[in-house]
Image 1 (cartoon, one colour):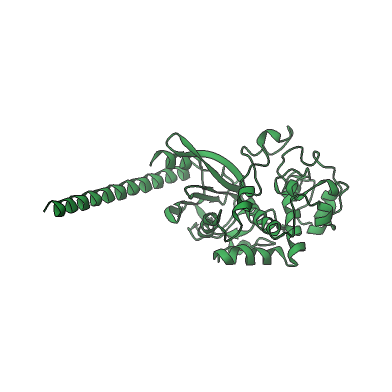
Image 2 (image 1 turned 60 degrees about the horizontal axis):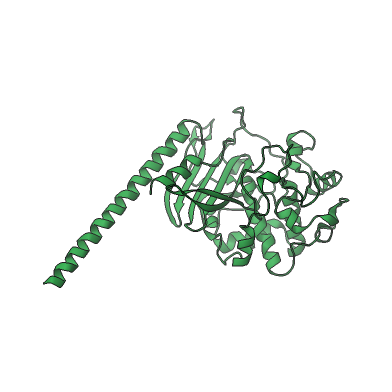
Length: 365
């Protein structure tokens, strides 16, 4: 009788614990939903948000307008342009080539991409390009400043930035450069003998089952929600050239969740390569004083920002990810040990990192 009674008491206790845990989780999700609703109301976000603990999705919703003329709302399945978040893909493809022995971190740009002509190509290495330490001028900033047009072909862009002096000596500083990752995209094509679009599909999207993700060369505005400029007008350009390598793929929140779950797995890279990707190679205090826009506030590895963020109460934990801005803004981050994931995208520019959500998750356990 004592044994049977003990079993019954244990089962009752287990049931109570499960019910308590379910109640806590429900409260956490409701609190998260209320918080994100407030962030939309106060103008902090206008787009989609996904929050997950590993495979367990706690929150997945979209806020705001997809089409102002048709009065349609954004949906959770919306395809959106991921902007510079795509640098994570490029870095992985390069690290795969290193792992196969086809590239080395000390390889010179002059050898990897002979078609790119610059007087300093023999001084720039693969490591410099991956970690934004090459000194090559950022074509994106030059376009924004009106110094380069938006419709140059890639060869024409190579020629233009090839004429420009470096911003600093290779390896001496850290300055974010879309041009550097454009060059990495071309290096991938040279080594694989295929378009970057094909390589991404075969080596990242298909293996992970990312069926709604693709690399694009021009924006198909009919397949995207409307994007709004800072003054509230609708983005209507359709002749902007996308060079590849520096980002701008199209994806969905679910596909990006799948990708962030794969970080650290041997599906894409070995443990050694992941460790190199997540090792800080560049630091904010190395950014040139005249850098614009403001420098990255976190160390940078190979295609990933590395952050220490609130995780549980007063403790912090290491997280990795990448943001993007161009058409709207976005960010995907993951806490490496726990697989906590936050993905946010906006179809109008906002600060893409939802610090309020990060803090809430850290204090609501």
